[in-house]
Length: 390
Image 1 (spheres, rainbow, N blue to C red):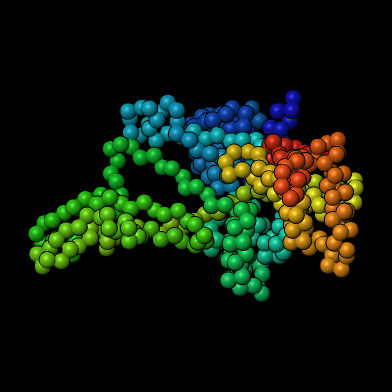
Image 2: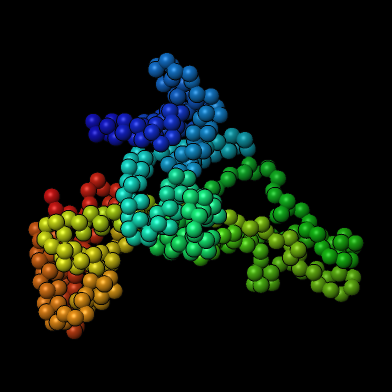
């Protein structure tokens, strides 16, 4: 029963955000599992016939799939049967799969924007709006769209704010799609055939096959990443001596094209940020604002895992908690430090003794014998906030 309600809600979301054609394609994928584009044409035609609608044609299904892939809702995988076929054309077949949780997560977009507005200001809010509207795009496209609406900002300011969102993992680089080529397909011109050499080497008919250098992964650069060879990779290239005695490095005159980095919003980090806000609001309503400040400092030790679902939570000793409270601006310089320490320890003991197990307390040896940690989140996709009171 709950699964049927979730599928109906996901269909309504797709219809509201993308239109009826995307809803038909998405509902078929959610109800039937991985499907090829031929299966999608057949099942959507059956659905249209039962509702007395015009059947979707190939370009309708194709454009719907492209839209869903653009927004990270559909994943393309090699066909499990066709990929093992000896036919080079049949081996290119793919199946498309979709997760209902990714669709339902779009209901949290207003919360994501609210968080970005209060945490990063107008620029962060506008950039996140562009990313959520486009699904995935480059930094150049995001900056151009924001500058259309905001006339009083510069390109440098927007790129700096975009880099801040990437550094804090609210945005992530999208992995490139893996294109499967048939075994007998010709390779690209950049990595096949003899590469042109300089001077007499070409006249003498000298030809050496050089391997293409791997494209480096973007690390810190938000624009285009050069695919040219580095000094270490150039040293490994084949070298040919010409008639004039000069040594030519094969492939040095043909650098690889630049790679454009595409970014998408990081669902895990934004979900965790929303959950943290909900917990802090709940603590402020149930206890007081000081307890909410304490739990805010402790939640800085909670971060999403690099791979998979869930989060990692570190234990913090009392001096570390004091330091984070000070960094967040929660400590008053004019108050008695001993009194503030006593109040902080009182709030920590209260939160650790709560029946919901909001904090974990652990005794260790050393100058600060007690450390605290928030209860880690088992699943970031849960419907309720982690460790919240019932």
